[in-house]
Length: 129
Image (cartoon, rainbow, N blue to C red):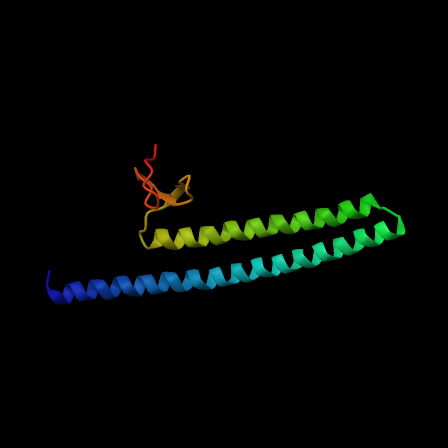
């Protein structure tokens, strides 16, 4: 292959990579911002729950229903965070797939990613089934 063709191919691949990563970066930024907002909201809700519980304790006026309501709202925020984190993982996986990178289907016992078809963990070397 002539040098010019190799250069064109390399530049084309670089442009594709930059384009895919730029789109991924924007989507990732939005999702990370949403996750941070949700975590702040959860922190505020936990602080409010503690204040309510302490007030109930000092007044000896325990209202379990009110506490359950607040805890349910916090659990809802946790679900929203988990959903946003799943979406973030999907954005990364879609970008990797668009760039032809091997898809990670599982994790090793050590926590390292295991791309499809690998026989050994790239992080710890453990043989995979």
